[in-house]
Structures are given as C-alpha cells and as structure tokens.
Amino acid sequence: MEIFWTEDVSDGLCRLGEEESAHCVRVLRHRNGDNVCIIDGHGTMYECELVSDSPKAAEAKIISTHPGWGSHGYNLTMAVCPTKNIDRFEWFIEKATEFGVDCICPVIGDHSERKVVKMERLKKILLSAAKQSLKSAIPQIQEPVSVNAFVRESAGVDSLKLIACCFDDLAPRHSIKEVLGTYSGTSVTILIGPEGDFSKEEVKAAMEAGYIPVQIGNSRLRTETAALGSVAVVYYNYM
Image (cartoon, rainbow, N blue to C red; front, side, top):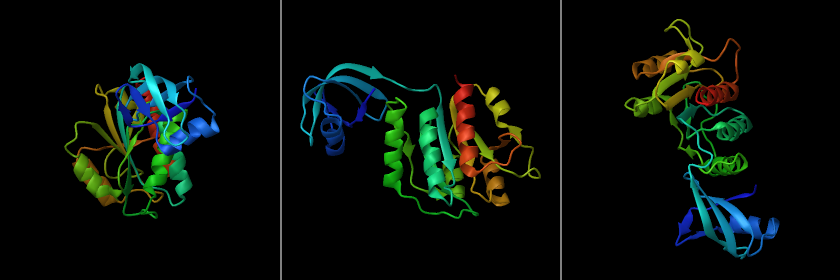
C-alpha cells in the first residue's frame, strides 16, 4: 500500500505538497482516476481518487475517512539522549515509530557527548517511518532540552514516569515490565540517558519529580537499544 501525506485537507479534497506530488505522479506514475491513500499526520487516513495529477500540486477527492487508522492504545513519550553516533539515534526514532510512539524529546544530559541534532532530518525520518508502518499519526519531535528542564516540565504531567538508569545505590530499580503491569493508565513517559548514563544528580531530580527508576533486563545496553527495548515493552504491554 502506497501512503502519501498532507496537512492540506478541506472541501472534500486532499492537496499534496510539491515533494509528495512528485513522488506520487513522477516516481510512482499515478494518474487521474487512480485510488490513493493519504494521511494527515494527526491520526486520520483518507482513501481518495486522484483528480489532478500535477507533479507539483496533485489533488485527490476524498472517498472515505478513517480516523485513528494505525493507532495504538497508549500515549508514549520517549525522552532520549541523542547518541554520539547520530545514525544510532536516527535508527531508534525510525524503529520506535514503527512500534508506536507519540512524542520524542531529545534531551541533553550531564554526560552527553552530542548536544545538537538536525530537526528537519529527524522529521523526515519520522514521516517516512509512519508511512512505511501504516500509521496515520506522525510522532511529534520536540526541540532538544536539558534532562533537568524536561524533568521539571513533565513533573506535573499525569503519566507513569520512568527513568532507566544503572545506579543501585540511590533507590531500588524495578523491572520495567513489572511496573507497567501494575499500571492501570495509558500515558507513559520514559527517560533514557546517554552512553555514560545519567549523573546521580539528574536521577535524584527525576525521582523527586515522580520518576521511578527501572531496569530493562540484566544486560548492559546501548542508549538506542535501551530506548527501543522500552518502546517494545510498552507496545506489548498494551496489545
């Protein structure tokens, strides 16, 4: 199934932007009368008939509307420190989108080696992954903030808040699977640190804001592996 994306939906029509139009008409050679599927990135998929096969401004008439297409039964925010090798972080956001994630926030920790990300590139990866995995909602990606700033901003949010860390001397670390298994809500926020882990001060601040220290098995995991493993546990918990 070929999926296209636009936010320009009105008067019974979906209007594709120049890049999506070129892909639809020039690359895939769709012509007037062809049936196409278009997502708005906010949770709705439209089955359409192409009525203008312009390679710069294609238009499609809406035949049927499918709200919640490809959705999941939880709301997951992943606050993850970008990896020194940005390819690994990009791999994470792609695969997390395929499982199902609602918001990704790059956070900069005391031990982070990477402090800058290319937001436009990350947005393109999220769009491509959403279309590939048949989802009508594209995950939000927030501008990078410090770990402490994210913790402060999320302190009042009604969500199960978890922080994956390696410290055993601050508080008992619980199994992420067990904590999720006892939670009756659907909103989850998970903090994942950089290659050098969080600082003790960051973990203490998170715990004071209501975050529960968790572990993701007994193996020592890379940042992107721990992050994706957490997404997978949440995904299977709500299946």
